[in-house]
Image (cartoon, rainbow, N blue to C red; front, side, top):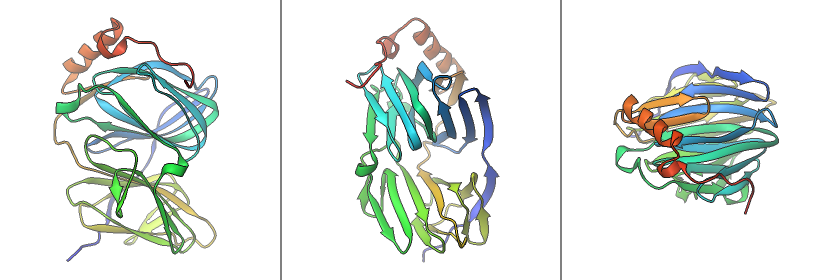
Length: 280
């Protein structure tokens, strides 16, 4: 018999950094998710120029505005509303994210398992027209990452994950199946939702128990609700994350991240080629 899940913990996103042109609300999450951050970038002060990453996958989902991505592996693209990209940083890469005016969205870091952490970097992209979507009784389910409801996204991570955008008209609901041993949470971006007696307000995160499915309801009479759903299979391996400004490295331990920083400083391995400045 299938058992409905409950939201077992609720917390609001935390202010991580704020400066002219940039606002970060960062949420530290459970394996395999390193963190999730809601960001707003305003050009030119919010430009994130060329910087290094390694050891994780960096996902950006743009909600409003436009931003440019360029990297040193020949990838260059413009993200527009409801488009998504996944950057597998592998053993090391350089990239930049530049808002075109204003860019507002959500970024997610997913840890790479140790056996593929040194892989060649890769880039995936889907615009709004390429995202599998279905609508039912006032609920719109858009599959941004992975597999769900018999649909398959263009984007995937090395460890299995599901990411979806769920829009609920007033009075609408959606039931989502869950893998019992996966880390699952939801993030309310607009309005509010209820699930098994627990309410999530705007910009609140709900950690979901490891059961079979969860139901979300929008009980507001005059406001739509928008939430992001995340579920991922833990890699169940120790890892350490080192950040300095926009630079970030994930490795088995601190020593491994500092070794990657030295590779970057000396322009070695994946940190050699220049970053593209425009779409080719």
